[in-house]
Length: 532
Image (cartoon, rainbow, N blue to C red; front, top):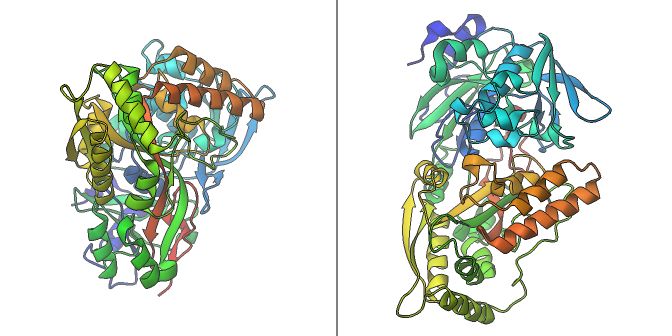
């Protein structure tokens, strides 16, 4: 039940009205309802503790930062209406629009100051905190070396936020679109602590507000009457369903229970193309699938072992036979098409035939002390889905061909990524999707100070130095080259094994209008409408 006594005025009336729409199917009232597949159960709806795309899909409908994204994935003003930048590129000043939280309380600059301090407070244990280390004093605050009051964000007045940076950050506007840069309601967090995220207590500043969360069933959000652009929001109610099995999701779509899916089964793409035509959206995506290695565990602290595992992966076979929906073999970590990045880094064996790769892999394993009488044995983790299972079986067989014995272990997405964050793995499947359109968003994952996001606990001072130099370089060509050098350094050390550059597959009913494919796979419901 929704604790309505925590909601005010129009928000209370909206929830009472919108409560007429049930989760079993399309609404029979005059409310416009969208039913979305969402891939997996969210671990949290606290924007500052979130880390997955399944959470992002919901949170970017609930909250808006200083910047947000348009339907095509480009940054536009969100809570801000304008900004200025100092001549040295270090001080960014944002003017806020006149807006309210969904409980009627005004959104102020103090909410933003409070939010940036909260995510960097080590007690929050935010996984994404290192993403905003470009902010002045962000890293030492997050490491507990300075008080949170030293974070370089301040309120000049109730409608003006000033952000001071450690170094010029040309991608800051794009970075500020990320869900971890959205504000949280200071008045509720101070009153309820971590329980502020509960339905009936949470207040949001985006086009929607949280009405219901039934774990492993659905999350329901309803239109926020206090949203500054509420008159243009044409869908009243959204249900997000955590369906990890794309075959089950497809059946629900075919039955009319879903208006759009999160995924579509790769092995059925040819059939789906014939049956659904333009309803099937296949699109390149700034996302990769890779294999993460725990370099802190023996024998994976031995570069020869990691190289052998990387050599044995037949990426072409996986891209074409396991997925076959626009995915391409990955011989670098940063996917193609990332804005401003020329690329050029690659795995050294890219042009080596597979037979020669396997021979080289067996040779490296022998040098590391493994062979027919003493094979390398380990457990390979992956999160449960049909595609992930098929990839896991494929790589298990590829490693078997070089004499490796690999046991498979699967779990749901939440358990899987919690294991990665705590280094409870030897070798594991992983994936990363761009938070913003810049190569740094991929490369920061292996930076020594990236905390929980650096699953492998890879540390190389030369790599970190190159990223630091890139962060302090304004010339785009020089910056791109420094990022390329950093990526090459990391690829040579093999803390990760790139497998494929991803593409997304999604079914969208023809009556859902305003949906636009984009490289970031960010599809905010505020731009959509339903025309039946």
